[in-house]
Image 1: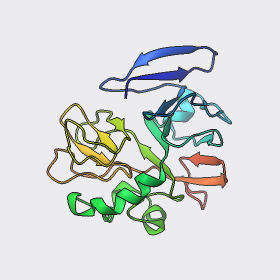
Image 2: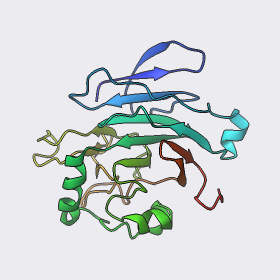
Image 3: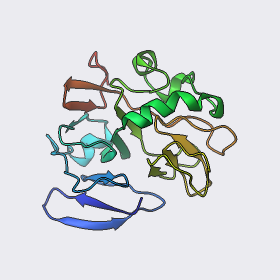
Image 4: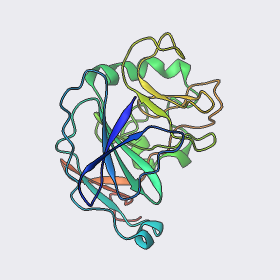
Length: 212
């Protein structure tokens, strides 16, 4: 939580506060979890296409080679914030223990992620265990949740295992974007179509077979 360092295409850095809606146009940001020092900003292999192409859903390519454990990279696709997060081993170990507290622990809602994502691992909701790719909008009313990756008690959950908390109406999601039971958000966070061009390059907006 706190401020985000936003890198803009023209160069330079600006400090922006996390807010109710954090739509970033042609920018990327890295958010480090507590304890991450000297976080490196991953290099974006290709900047976003034109506004017209974005509206049409042009894919976005991102290099994650510099993404460190506990960091979140924020970019934009189809006017939506996309989160790419490198999860810690402790986070991965905690995810299966949360199934009993979640509304859809096995990602049964087929509209929330591509089928190949669910088949890869319904609990992790990712192609690679440590890398999560999510649309950063709450499925209740579209607010942008805060990432609270630390595994420690929080004011909103004394048994917090890391995840996302929506300050608008108190919805909670784990670090796989799975929604907790009994909160306003009805479904898990959306996983956008994506694939790995190589070990360090993700193409967002296109399925592995090439169909957008």
